[in-house]
Amino acid sequence: MFTISVNGNRLGGDGYLISTTTIRAELEDYIKKEGTTLHRFAEVSGVNVGTLSGIINGNRPIAVGQLDRITKAMGLSEGYFYDLYVDECFVPSAPHWRRLRPFFMRCAELGRHDCIQEVLNQLLEDLKQVAGIFETAERMFEQGFKEAAVILYESVIESERSSHSERLAMCYYRLFKIHHPDSSKGFKAAMQFLTYRHRLPEVYALDGILMLVEVYSLKFNWIEAEAYADELCRLAKALYEKKVWRCSDFKPLRPLVYYYGKGYLMKSGTYEYRGMFEESKKWIAEYADLSWFEGDDETQTAVIEQFKMFAKVNHLCVDIKSGDRSKIPKYVQFLEEEPDEVIEGLITLIESANRHQFFIDDVLDHFSEEIKQYRLFGKDKCFSEAAVSIQSKEPSFINRCSVFFQNYAIYNLRKGNYEEAIKSKLYSLKIAIALSGFGYDNS
Image 1 (tube, rainbow, N blue to C red):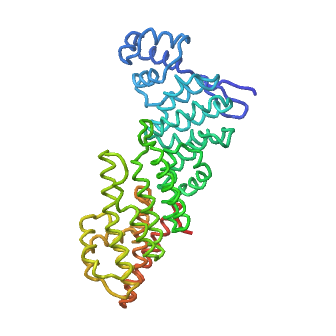
Image 2: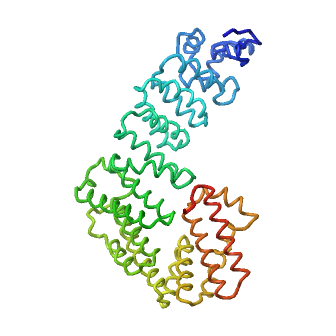
């Protein structure tokens, strides 16, 4: 390819400018233009004068920390030289991870995903680099740089040769963890993870299976949700019986009792939502008293007490759905004490009212302010804002708002309030559309 010089750059035969400058040349030019000395620049930048001399002479590699200090001293924006840094230090030859990993982490911090991808394109020509890429992805995940971590995890998946690799399973698990439940990629990530869950270390499998239960519950697929709830209970019980919880290196995100109790709570919920209330009560009993779990950890004790409370409330809920109106005052009292449960509680009450042909106007009036807030998700002027804000909220909460207005429409239809019934149905549909736009349609 022929080239011609244009203002210090080379113009290739394809018409694109090819930069011929280097970080060293830029540094030298700056020192000359500013009329300063190397010693003075060393004082300003905090980079040792000997190191600066070695960098300019081309016999010392630049560490990313040094590059950042030099860039700041020159009054340039963070990451200004990163494109040149990639071309000079990483593309010509395989870099050492001692220098590459800090650069990747800094790119993640600054959102320079383009630089990460460019280096990865070079690295992946050598499959020996996959381990280093995975380790760096794990660091990014731990430090909260999720977008950058996704790029690395996907690169590992593309390059991993063994479909039975634990590392491959971990990549799919991490992607599921990142995308669940905040984006349209959540369900796709769940399906990709599904076949790899048995290859995960058990400490991660607990959370992976729990997320599967949540995904299928969000889609109202109660058969699948129950199946994975059962799987979660079996795994938690097996780990408990093997006493792995006594091992210092067994560190799940939550106490083992949480996964056991949560499995039965979700299982009982699948029967409740299918209207099989007596069957639901049977499984509520399984998490009502978990005091038999060994261990006296304060967190575990708190979890056991929480499930005990959940069991009492869910028993009330099932009784009300069965038509027992005498339990409503006690249930309303609970909702007053637990505002996060109001949306679910109102659904319980209004579903029961519709099923058993009674009215709860006094309760709806009592929670009128909360209902006004739920309406914001369905109003035309707020609809776009609601759609944008969905990613910052739990899709399950937004989903329940849709379910509430669907039932509220039926309630108002029964009362002859046709205008309110139509409005409520529209609220429900608009919220559902917003959810489906982010991949949470329930089809």
